[in-house]
Amino acid sequence: MPFDPIIAEIRFGMGLSPRIAPPVSQDAMLARLRGPDDAAARFVIPLWADTYPSPRDYRDLAQVRRAARGTDREAEVLDQQRAMRAAGRDMWGATFAAHLARAATTSDGMRERLTRFWADHFTVRAVTGVTRHLVSPYVEEAIRPHVMGRFSDMLRAVTTHPMMLVYLDQHLSMGPNSRTALRRNRGLNENLARELLELHTLGVGASYTQTDVRELAELLTGLSYSPKNGFAFLRNIAEPGPEVVLGKTYGGDVPRLDDILTALDDLAMHPDTARHIGRKLAVHFVADDPPVGLVDDLAAVFAETGGDLDAVVAVLLRHPAAWDATRAKVKPPFGFVASAVRALDIDADALAAMSFNEGRAAFGRHLAVMGQPWEEPVGPDGWPEDGPSWITPQGMAGRITWSMIIPQRLRDDLPDPRAFVVTALGPEADPAVVFAAGAAEDRAAGVGLVLASAAFQRR
Image (cartoon, rainbow, N blue to C red):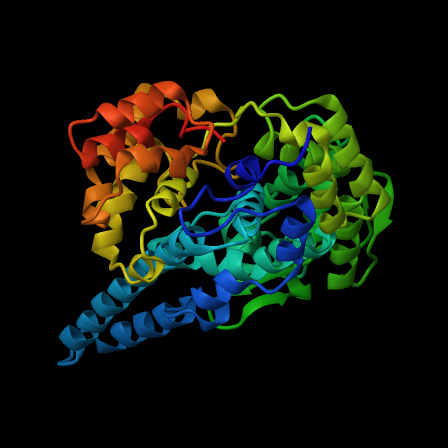
């Protein structure tokens, strides 16, 4: 089917805008993706090492408080801890606001979509309150730079990132025969190894066994993290000797980080990985049950190019199945509110400047009701992709409530619903929605009806 700029912006981008023109071709979309990341430059999310407060900041202040117990300084240090926790909360709110502002203003919507796709594929979640604001910095440095790069580079970056190591307790894993484990009652943790095989590379039901999980878990020992030093490879907790994963031997008597990285590269290039990634991309962008030919073509180019994601995205965008006029996918809650603020032409700088409480009132609480609390997926498999998981009675009630109440809080001068319906849905808008928008008793009701419509929930 031919390229359609409306489908391009709704299915592959962040939604239609009255001010930002949609792309004119697949080549134009690819050129934007290969060009500078303007949205990230405008609305900055700090990298892990540059984020305040850091885990080291929390640790250092906790040590100060322990030393101050029972002294005249204890109350002062307690106030400093409260202020640090408030700073972490505000940073969490600021990173959410930056994501929303990027979505609202970007002319490179597919970069935002790919970033969210891969952030979900490599899901992490804060395991303590002091790291809640560090999920977005993880995405910013381990995922966003690689969305048009090599899959193996992204896999290396996320697997060795402190956020992943802490989330899956890899920093607590010790080789059973390592020097440290022989002195301590602490052993092997298989979480990261299992998720690497089951979720990140080969996929559920692929050609690996529990023995492969165990051997990979032993190989991964040594990957560690501390608040003081960040990521480190520690030989004293690494399992000595070779490990056999999927029939290939890695490592030797002296554990090395390079052996782990080689194994990750091999997992990235496994035929099952190509199929798993190809299908996930097709499901995310095209349909819950995507055409077999599309999945085959994506998997083939992934394998042929060594996991070159630029080439994979190019095949996705140029495939006829990607341009079917049927809007088969349901927007998840963040995609819904992001496309709404984009259609409403909400000032991106105002979005980025929202305080924590403002963002929570306008978006955070509502996203939770819709079923997608910000950066809080239930498990390492991330958010669901199928429509029925999102179109639930509670979820739809949350979307309708948000549509009817929040737009008028974000804009004093709401657009005329008769024009807005075309802005939000395109020139071929559903006639029933066009009629409802025109018959609404006021602008707020008309805009709300458009945003709450079944047509706007889909992409």
